[in-house]
Each structure stands twice: as C-alpha cells, then as structure tokens.
Image 1 (cartoon, rainbow, N blue to C red):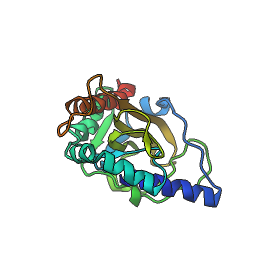
Image 2 (tube, rainbow, N blue to C red):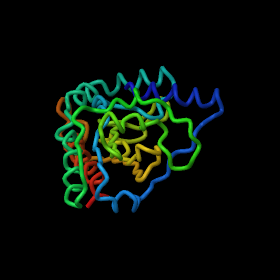
Image 3 (cartoon, rainbow, N blue to C red):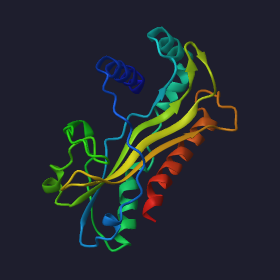
Length: 229
C-alpha cells in the first residue's frame, strides 16, 4: 500500500514542477564492462521492499479505501509471504561474473538507495543518483545494482471497480554503474506480472495466487541473471 500513496505523490509533484524526467531506456551490457578482466566489480542489492498489495487505478482516497477493504483478506495473506531466496540473487550473478574471469566482490549489506545523492549531470545514459562515492567505500571500479522496487500482488482498478483478478508482481531494475564516471554500462527494467489459471479467491491461503507469487520470483531472478550468462 505504501507504493500506491508514493505513486500519487510522485505524479502530483511532477505535475506541479513540470520537470518530469524521461525514463531510462534499456541498455545492453557494454563491451567496456565484459572486456575488462582486471576491473574490480561489486554486486549489490537494494533494500527489499515489503511484500504487499497494490491497487493501481484506485486513484482517489475513497477509491483506495474501498479497494483496501474489499481485498482485506488478500492483503493480510500477501503480507505474510517472504522474499524466498531472492536475496541470494547477487551471489548467483557474482558466480556468473567470476566464471567470465572477472574480479568480483559481493556486497553483503543492502544498499539504501535513498541515501545516494542525486546526480546533476545531463549526459545520456548516466545514473540518476551519484554512485561515485561508493568507489572507495567498496573498493571496486564498477557496481552491479539489483533494485527490487515492488513485490507482492497487484489488482487493477478503475476508480471503485476492479478490472481484473490480482496478479503476482515483481518489479525492479538492474544496472551497472561505472563508479569513476557515473555512466551506465547496462540497464534492464524488469516487470514480472503473473496470474493464476486456478480460482484465485480462496482465502485465507490463496494457494493459486501464492504459487504465482513464487513463480514470479523465479522468473524475475532469471530475467536479472540472463544477461550475464
């Protein structure tokens, strides 16, 4: 639910300031990254979000309140789900890089992206935040960042009316930042939405949607890992 309120605030801020930023387009992994075996590479994951429900399209506060009440038992169950072995994704990617002969350091602690300052540069394909301060902190030249932004189940609404069944969701992005220049050498948005072919509305455990949730996690892990194979 926190993401729904955050999204509303973000849209309002963009409309007020008139300075909406174009989304970063996907980038294939740079040859400068894959061809530098002497480069020290760090692999880190952002702080994982709370597993929760979202109701896109329930835009007004009364609409959102109605959607929340109508899906109360679903939200209660979704909030009990775990991230499974998703935190191990950084280790999986590190092994793939090591297999290519690269020097790799896995950063154990989650990276709090809210603590990274904004980057004022206007060059294309640069990170929106200034990661250059992490070069000395982690003693690496480049950083692979896996950022999971949303995890749980979303159900689309049109004001007060649901427009479909809930779907398991994993949303985020993966990118490589050159810590000397703050340039991106890879960028991949990941948006996994998976429904169930079973009856989803089976409280209190919602087995069909629960299975879809764990399948979404596996699909998300595969999407992040595939570029490094």
